[in-house]
Length: 393
Image 1: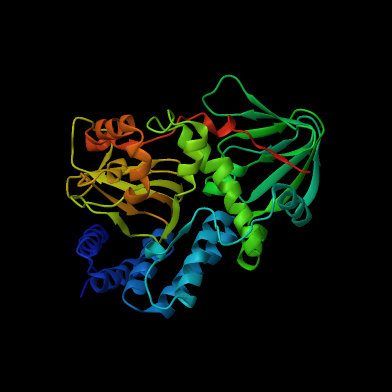
Image 2: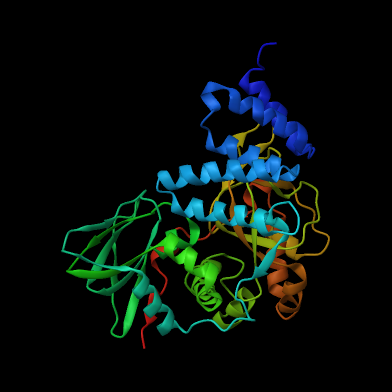
């Protein structure tokens, strides 16, 4: 019997996943990966492993995930490797199968006393390598892998962002270290800028895999890194979203403390069209697809079933209407890669909103937009406008 052509196999597997028939989907992916042009396709391998996991074929899922993990590391994609390692460990140690989508943890781990900033910075320096750049030397280029977090201890840098005529600068304050490359580190995105030494500059360079391994064995260090994520990425991004920018700094920080971390594997459905799904999400790392019916906007990619698809990236917020009661989504959201999300529930948000009637009206207006306009994106220049200095005493 001749092999089914690839386009038909891809249609069949999408239909199987949409009806949650993971057995059929796994069978389709076996056939897809047998095709010469697909045998090395990482996305297909990830989806096959996910279906195997859903079907209880845990050994096969771990083997395939591990194969992709090795390829990520060979390609220098340490951020993606770390995310995938989390999924593998969850399968190995979890009480039952399934992705980590149902697992959530506080953004800040209140039961663990985190290291203070000075201690955290000292430990990160001890874990890193001291490097020196001369004026004009390049620290990183746009598009590089985000496999390093840098701590600048002396000197200054110039940051060249694409599509911006004026470069930005990073200097070191007395008694501080300056975070460099933290956006890529927290989001696993490739470098968004080229960074060049303006003067002689000294850094501590800490490999992301070294930080990941330390977090697995040191709860106080992990809690401090989560606090760093909150203070230096999540909360600043929240200030750049139109609905939350009017909230004062103190209350916005308190609200951000209530977000929970959620992790999903590739190929999962987070929100179904027509579902009354609780809460809103900010994407921290990975890529998701936002699928909706056609409206007056036509700049999305059309799928086989006639719906439109937009990619979601770190910093995007989705399903803001989920903070309101009885809100029904007009779109479907699925994962394309392993993802990490920050989730704000309706129950947590309600007391906050009752004291601020204006924010309910703002969310209502936003959620009544056409579906294609209900992805909330931060201002595109926030990356270099945040305070990246951390005290060392």
